[in-house]
Length: 451
Image (cartoon, rainbow, N blue to C red; front, side, top):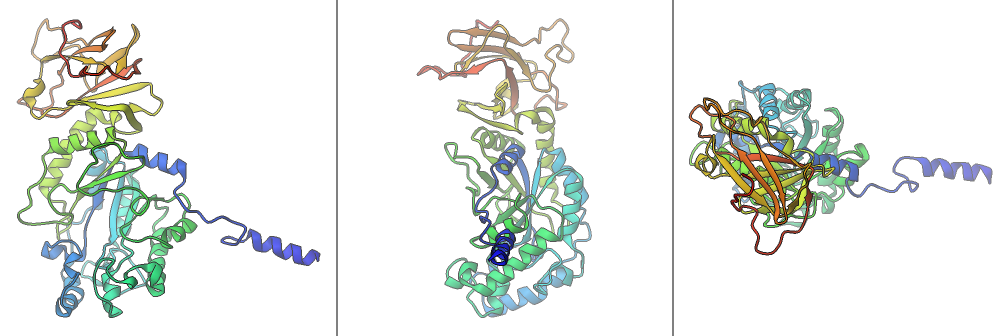
């Protein structure tokens, strides 16, 4: 009898045995960590970048001839001699991006990593190097959290198993209903989670049943975003969603490099999107699409540098923050620090003329209640001098009133030579508390009492 109970205890203590409850969701403390990151870089890059086509999806419904040429010919063109992941990582860090998500395997099934599961991978190209490893190492060196994208659907697998290529249009497109596909995907998940150091985030772009649990068995601290969180593409919800959530956006009209007919967003649009998404409690995952030669296209580099300048001034308002109960009033958005000791008011502008350099603006914030101890500053600006103006009063004035907190401030930091910097100015407010504003009162009211 004693031997039986001893054996039973050993069995119960074994990993994955009946003595353990399988992990079924992200750890709460890891979700909180993820939410504090706030801003990340998405990277879409695949073997079909040489054609400038939509990533992977040209295979869906394609003829057998097209599929065969895609699989056999396109890898011979993949040779990004200008690939420099350290430059990518430094640019991402400068722009304020705290995590990266890279397409280790998109729907096509082409693996951008060294895998034993399929010959359809980056090692069998003229480039012949493990791009995923080099990218992970470079971003990790810059202190950026590592995320990997993997598609549970796999068009190469479907083609080699004589299944129609499409997205969830056949029962065997789902790994949970296709044991061979499940085993194939699990082996790739294992390679990604064991060969590249500790991975922080995984983006399952497709049905993850069975794969989520397997991934957590390898790395319980892994944060799984898509497949568990709301991850809207190219749209931001009108109202805050229950946290966590993540908005995914391109800079142009496509995820992968698109050489023609691809107008890019402006830097102001991207900055305002970041502000809105953070005010609504979401993370912002902004995509770049590297060129076939391995460089990030110059238009996207330039946009990231505009974001970088704004973030260099205002970064503290974006990370480790949460929504205020009132997220905006007209063109002013709000976040607050997790400990609620500071509130940030983002005064967004459509052009430099909305609040010109050197001009004073007065605001009434009816949702904030202040005291004589309330402090307000303009992030990045000392509010003492305006360049070339003598005897000019650039101080911030703060007056708590029965109608709300009155603030008067100068837009005085010179960021462009021509003084036409069009992006949001951020006020940091300390020692104020939230109150429900009275009906009909606007936070964007001009007042005289703060003068």
